[in-house]
Image (cartoon, rainbow, N blue to C red; front, top):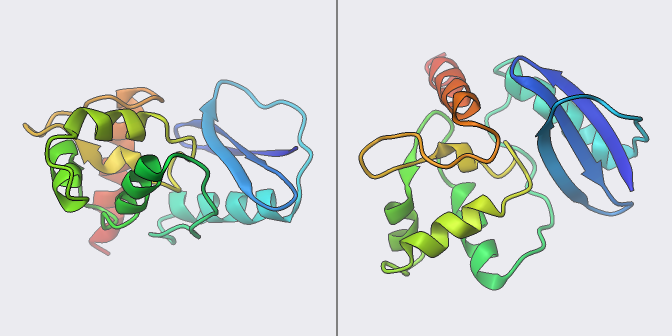
Length: 151
């Protein structure tokens, strides 16, 4: 297991990978010991570029999850930088109109913060709902993207 950290404007981000794939990108309270490989270094560079407003889409990693989770996560990567979608819109796009709660559950299982942009999914009424890393971060990320998408 390889680990590295990025100090971002909204806290530390831990990047974990195996020899061959990205495992997680999570907000954490503090840095631990780093042991970086090329995958960790690559995603650290992408995260840094994202926060500088220089990157709008991340390299799409190999994902591990149920077929339904993979379908939902893949759809999240199609939400344009600086824009949002709702849980029900995601359910409609993947042709599972009645599975809005299941979509929310799949989004909640996302371990790749920023890379799979679950922060771009909001409630039907426009509210910032369910974000594993606190809604103030979700609000900051959406504002950051809106500001940088107009450049």
